[in-house]
Amino acid sequence: MVGMVIAKTTDEDIEFCFNEGDRIKRDPDVDINKTFIRYNILSRTPERELKPVPREEYIAEKGVPKSERRVLSVRAQRFRSIIQFDVFAADYKQATKAMNELEDAIFSYMHYFKRNGVGEIIFKQQLTDTALDTYRENFSIKSLQYQVVTEKQFVIFDGIIDDLEIATT
Image (tube, rainbow, N blue to C red; front, top):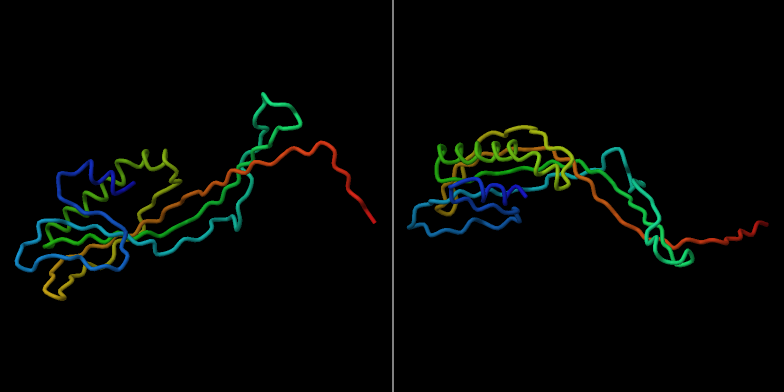
C-alpha cells in the first residue's frame, strides 16, 4: 500500500519494492536518476493474543432450512511488526527529499492505511545515514523504522448441530 501511495503522490522516479537481498542493478556509465525504496519486515510478533480469538459469530444463510444453516465465526489475531524502509539515492540531498516524501505520504494517508486493515503505524526511529560504495555503485542511504499493528482474520463456517448426545462414563 505504501508503494502505491508513493507512486501516486510523487513526481519523482521512485522504485519501491520488498528487499529480497538482490542488488540494485545499474549501468556504471549512466548516472542514477532514480530513487529506490526497499522495505524489510524486521520482526512480527503477536500482540496480546497468542492465537486467533473470536471476534464475531452469527448464523449465516438465514433463508435456508434450519438443518442446513451454518454458523459464521470470525477469529482474528493482532500482530506488531517492525518495518524498515531504506531509501537509496544518488546523493544525500536526493535521499533526504525522498525520505521526507515517504514520511509525508505515510502521515498524510494514515486514514487510507487504517481503512485497509492497518491498525496503527507509529514512527519508531531513523537509523544512522550510510553510503553504499561497492562494485562502482554509489548511493546515499537513509533508513527509517516504523512499528505497524495489523490484524489477520480467519472466517470459519461451522454446521449447526441440533441434537448432540454426549456419552459419559
